[in-house]
Length: 257
Image (tube, rainbow, N blue to C red; front, side, top):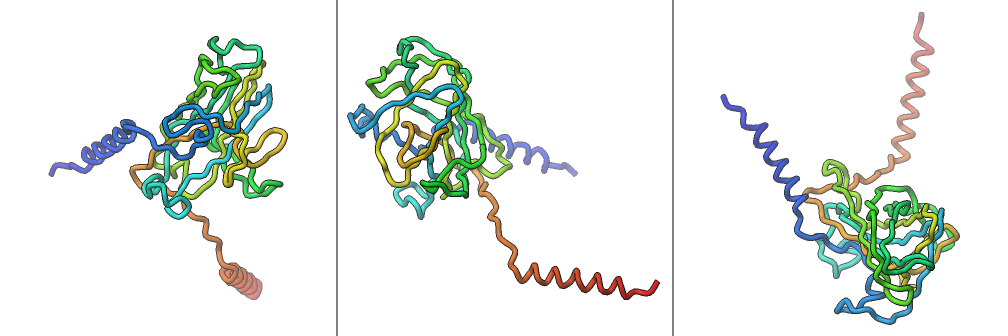
């Protein structure tokens, strides 16, 4: 009798991997580019500015993965199965003494996704634990000056494990953390506005708004990969378990030798 199960299983897995790898386009999970760009992607003179990051410094921007309840305007299927991150982009500038048109290495610059800390500070939000590291471009060419919108620098993401819960869960907050160990400083553009729901944190503090103009993109998982919910064990169950342990201990003490 022919065994067709194994070839079919392998073929199904191959098709699933091909579909994931060959996704035509990624969705925008979260974006603060609206501060710099209008509906035609043209630069606008909104309240914004730029700042620099020195060796050992870090800054992080909070972003939220929407669900149908939190953002009805978003497609309900955006991250209903959980999303794999495909990349992130930031508007960066060269160092203060750099020629903005000169190629520059971003070696020593790390962009990571962090969880949202459960502990609260002055602003109520702060990065938690590191979850994922994006790929830093080896070389970029800054084509914007400090007086303009800067250069849109793309950080890519490696494919994620399809058998594990998706990195980005619906209705969950995360942080996009930028760290530099470069000798020379460089800068980024920020919005300068205090928009509800947007936060930043840095090596020296935290606040409302976003520390830099960024966009996070991802793809909805082909299969449900939602994180398991942590259901606390009721107190009654703990009490019953303790009582059973006590009875067993008493029974062992009374057992004759």
